[in-house]
Length: 64
Ligand SMILES: [Zn+2]
Image (cartoon, rainbow, N blue to C red; front, side):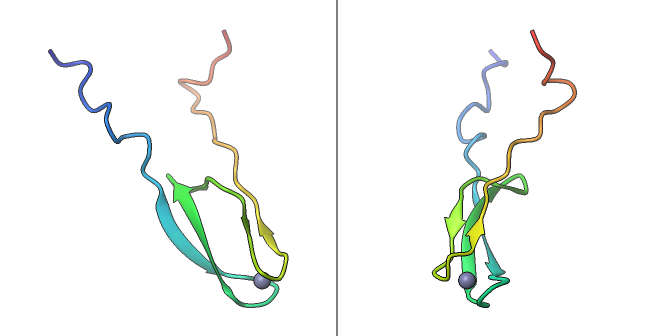
């Protein structure tokens, strides 16, 4: 037994981060996973932080 190790909890490691809104200066909280923004977040002033697409790894992203 070995290969199935580490399945649990490896994919959902979201990190809560903060940034200042470039429009109104309020703090916007957003979640990242491996440095990538995972969800759209909208500030109260209407400014929107867009989620970022996952960057495919060269090794895994090959088309079938
Ligand atoms: Zn704002």
